[in-house]
Amino acid sequence: MSELPGLRSAASDQQGRQIPPASLARLTIYLRALNSLLAEGIERVSSEELADAAGVNSPMLRKDLSYLGSYGTRGVGYDVQYLNSQISTALGLTQDWRVAIVGAGNLGRALAGYSGFQSRGFEVVALFDADQMIVGTEVGWLRVSPVEDLATVLHRTRANMAVLAVPAGVAQQLCDELVAAGVTSILSFAPVVLQVPDRVQLRKVDMATELQILAYHAQRAQDPDLDAGSSARAAQ
Image (cartoon, rainbow, N blue to C red; front, side, top):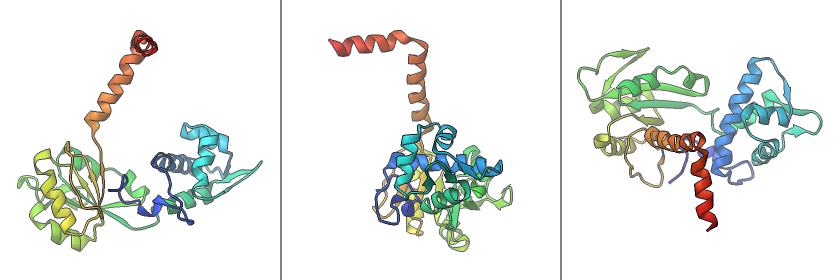
């Protein structure tokens, strides 16, 4: 099972080299930085400037970009528009990504109303829920459809990517229905491990886990003695 959904074309460059997951994730950060530079009217950027904007060091940035090819010129830097285009192509963002959101609760509605998706190449085309009090209501220009019509609406809207924003108890069933309807790229916010066929790309976002990891680091930042104690035990 792939680590990143919807980015099959980004898994390798034109020569077929595999891009490590960490580098692939950083490409999205570089793209965001490049978009900001374009908005400011900046046409060229050095590796040091781009690395600084992305929060990494320049050797790491150059190594990451080497998986795509060599787009910089020594002493001149990178053409911002061209590098933006190359990373977008590698990530598959020049393709037509049509997203269906299953679950129209607070999270699903927030995702459906997020304007940043459109600017990044993702169009939300369908929103589903099982609650008859929610079905038929509108979120922006979308009308919430019943989950019973999932396959029909997915076919009509040509959705090729889905987001699961549902409780754990129904997540696997709805995931199975998405797969049966032909969706092969799924992003899940459900707090449960889902099973999918090898041909389906699934990525899980667990906000509780991320907060727990953040709490771990925050605790050590507040109490340096914790790290000192760990180092002492490791030295014994």
